[in-house]
Image (cartoon, rainbow, N blue to C red; front, side, top):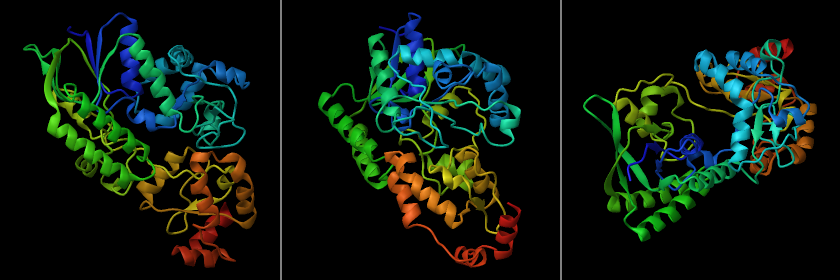
Length: 414
């Protein structure tokens, strides 16, 4: 049966689009490169929401859409049009309710300290630069990071909830399928998509799913193992996938970014070649190029999420981050990706976090309670092994190979 809409990709964007269309009575064909969830399933599962969500109210914060807009307008610059951003802020509380309607769960348990990812006691936190200067002077700080209630990284929980919700609404999901072309009519209107799929071989599909799911378990922590497993799955797909086509008057592209495309990264992000890619091998830019091929436009292709969060423990915000000449990189209490972007673009991708013995001891004391299990091993490595120390700033600077005079001037000023 000819669907009303084809959705490409089953991360949170594709799943939300599929569910929203199905709720309005549309028949939906969802084409998924792997087996459901996309990069969302690997993520922390943090939904940025505000404007007066129930969880914010439970935590004692009376956020408003206007206050949320005032903050985000400064944070994101011109990336999103004003009318789109305003609609996002106005509809934000309803977005959380909509996700809950489809199986997601959230709580108003607020993290009492600055963190990059809350532990299993806290599910609401200040996830951006809301408390940092100058943002705190432009909008009243409010916690807007809503973590889904789920063990480990919560993205897997959100992906499962929405996958289940899509299936309940009758969305037809075709796993292990790769869209090759968007079909256009003579008047340039969309009329469908051509794709490759493993749908005709149950045994090959099952083997592909097993290898892919195993690979995704190692995607964040052990990339070489993940890559080897993905390569095996890719060979199964290449040898057995068959051509298919579907007609529909609308196609929604939600197929991820291009962090796993070396060619596109060299073209658009030449200074970010050493950054470990976030996502899955399906984030190869193919979805973007599908849109470009039928007349779509792109913007902000030179932007990439790259970060080295200092916190938690929150005591690590009390030091100073400097570059090669000892100059300060930026405010340490801003969102981790913002600080790192300044380091990447303005300081040859290198920075050093400087602390005194009191701050270091405080961070060690905070580590057991503040750091979630998924980050504990890394933080123990930092605080007990992977660092340098000296009895003076000048000697510490020499160990790092940075300017002693510059470091002394920065610390004295700071």
